[in-house]
Each structure stands twice: as structure tokens, then as C-alpha cells.
Length: 385
Image (cartoon, rainbow, N blue to C red; front, side):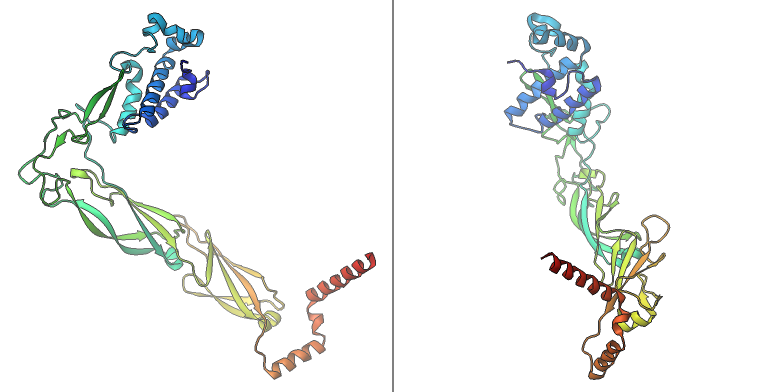
């Protein structure tokens, strides 16, 4: 049964020209023979989507197909029997030239050079480096020295890959074009030259130091600057600090992934810091003044009102974290944790007992109120039973 062209491209019958082109481009990239070498099913699918696009991208052919279906192309109609307008060289040049330039450009690793199809020298690989810093370093920013396993241009051949005094020669397989064509059924597929890998040139006398690669493995030591305000998981891109390119190609990039270590005193929430301060029961009851630490190593005084309860919070403006690439600073929220005395001496126990006998329960209205409500609840349950 003949394929339905709309189903083949995964589009609706009212899809516009842009949608048709977009669907074809996506599928062509997925099933292109260069991406699926030796896969007969992928090759078949590639031919089907090419045939569908040839028809649906042409206004007249699409109109005929919508009206008559595949019968519109039988007996020589509309450009060939069952071929959807293909010529012997594969895709018809007019319908595919623009979109295949885009597709092949991506397979070839970028734009083609003028006057030929050879690749530019290969760009070096990007590198990833993970590093951890303290919360204080994240607050103030820090310079770090790191060692990165990388590659650099070979000094012996100056990155050319050829032994000094010699140079590359034109590739005999592609005649310097960087691309070769292969016939696959009624398709002509253009691929990167396997001999020169798209360069159009081959190294006939490779450099003895780098074996013709134009680069050598070498650890590099870099000093990197981490800006103030970075958060855990921040990614920093250092352009041109990755691996050296092949035979003089541009350097890749280095990506730093920064993790911020937990702190003993502070917990971070975006630009704000949280700090739990433990205070004696007497300070919470009578009031007083305490000192709390700040992330910059300083101290700040906090006045505790008499009768302060556990969990009471104080917001200290502009005592939090620096904001990344923005002016201003977050706040610090101090939460009180009231500590119940332990390991009491005999005299301390006597004093607390005297406090209770002197009406100490009256000084704790919340606990008194709770147990009053609890007694009411028990009485209600008893009456109900």
C-alpha cells in the first residue's frame, strides 16, 4: 500500500509550507544515511520522507496529490511514475537545495568554505571541570588555581600536523572538495570524505612529535575568578580555554561547574541566609543582648525582648548573600532556639522549685492554656461515652 505523504512527515493536511519544511528537516536529520550507516530500515525511511517532501513542498504537485492521491503521478503525470518528481541524481535540485545545504552543513560540522566543500580546521572539544567553594567564598568571590587535562598546539609543527619543512597535500579521494558522493538507489547522497575527514587535504609527512594531530595532550594550570554571589550548581563558561583544535583549529571552551559547600552556621536560600542562635532559658525569659555571626566574619548585636519564645525570628537587613552580577545584598534571618537547662546542681533545682511554688505556672500562659483545653477535650469525650 502506497504511503500517505502527510503521515510520513507527521503533519496535518492543512500544514503550511513552513511546517512541511520543518517536519522534513527534522526527519531527514534523524534518518540520514550518514547518521545510520548500515541501517537498511533507516535508508528506506529516508527515501520515503524525501519522496513525501518532494511532492508536498511543490504547490502544484501537492494540489494534484490532494485531489487524486498517488494516481496523480502514475503514467508519467507530474514528473514521473511513482517517483514524486525525482530525477536520476536523487532529489531534484530546486526543491532540496536550500534545506539540504542546512542539513549537510550540520553533518559537515559548520559552513562550507567558498570555492569548495572542505571543512574548516576542527574546533577543539569543550571541557568540563567541577570545583567546590565555601559559602564565604561564594559571598565574597574568589580566585582559584585549577589544573585541567587538556591539549595544546604542537610546538614542533606549530599546529599544522606536518613535519617542519613539509605541508599537507590535496586529498586524492575527494580532489580537495572534502565531500564525496555515493549513489543509494535513486538517491545521490553527499558525505564527508572518509580519507581526509572533510579537510580536503591529507598529511603525507606527519609530525613526529604529535603524529600528525597538530596537538599534544598536556595539563594546563589556569587561574579562574569566581564572581561574588554564585549559587550551588552555577555554570561558568571560559571561552577558548578548552582543548586545542585539530591542525590549527580554534580552541573549545571550558565550563566550570561550581558547587557551594554547606556551612556550619548558615543555611542559604537564594540571597538570604538563615542562622539558628541558641540562647539560655534565662536570657529568653528576662531579655538581654546577644551577638550573632555574619557571613563576612563580623558580628551583629541582637536585643532579645523579655519573654522571647522559641522560634522567634529577627530579620537583619543587608546581612545576607551578595547577589550575582546585581547590586544589593540579601538579608539574614536569625531564629531563636531556647535551651532548657540540663545537668542542674542541687541549688539550681531548689531555685527552680521555689519558682514553681511562687506561681511559676502563671508565667507560662501558653502551656497553661494548652492543658486547660486538653482537660475540656477529655471531659467532652467522657460525656460522649
